[in-house]
Length: 285
Image (tube, rainbow, N blue to C red; front, side, top):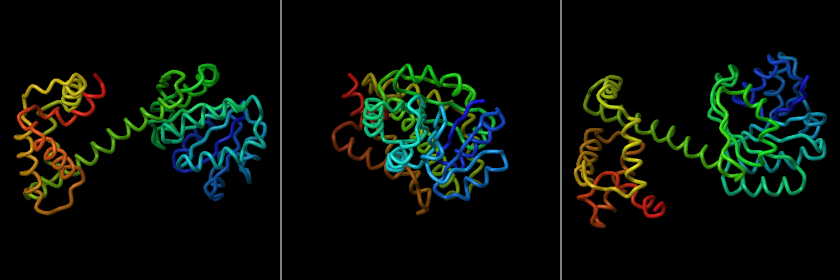
C-alpha cells in the first residue's frame, strides 16, 4: 500500500484525497485550518498536526496550496519529516520564475521536487478526470507518471525546464478567465438591449470560436495583419457594444477598447484585428 501525504485540503485537495482513498492509498493530510482536514477522516485518512508530521514515512507528497509564499512556507515546515527518497509533487498554480528558482534550489539540495499544476476542478478530481501538466527533472516525472495517470485522464510533460508547466497553466487560466469575462460582457450587451441574456448564446451556433482563436492566433504569431476585419471597424463595433450595455459594468471590452485606441493612434487602424497581438509578433519572429 502506497503511503502518501496531501498538504492543502481545500476544495481541490479534498477531491484528490477522496479519489486516492478509494484507490486504496494510505493517506496523511494536513491543512492550516484543521477542520478542513478533519472532514476527510471519514475516508480513513490520518490528520497530522504539522507539515513535518504529515510527510513522515510518505513516498510521495502532494501540495495543493494557495500561492508561492505558502508553498515556500510549507516546504520549509515539512522538510524535517521528509524522507530523502520522497518526491514532492506540487500542484499549486505559481509564478513561473519563482517556480523555476524553487525547483532548481530544492533539487540541488537533494529535495526531489517537481511542479505539476492541473486543469482539474474538485468534482473532476474525485473522478480522476482532467489534465495534469508537468515540468522538471525527467527522472522525477518518470517516477510519478503512473501515479499521476491515476489522478487524471491526461498527463502532459513539457520537459526539464522547470517553469514550463507553470507558464502553460497561467496561459490556460488566461483563456478560462478571459472567455468568462467576454461571456459576461456578451450577456451585459444583450441585457442592455432588453434581450434575455441567455438568448445571446445562440450566436455561438453561427461560428466556431475555436477557429477564430486559432486563425487569428496564427496571424498574430506570423505578423500577418492583412485586413479581413479592420481594427478601426472593430473599434467602432466595440463602441456600439459599450453604448448598448447602457452603463452596466463590463469586464473586458473597455480594456480592449483602450488597447485598440492606442494602436489606432499609432497608425494601425487599417490593419486587421489581429494587430492586437503586434507586440507578440515582434518578439516571436
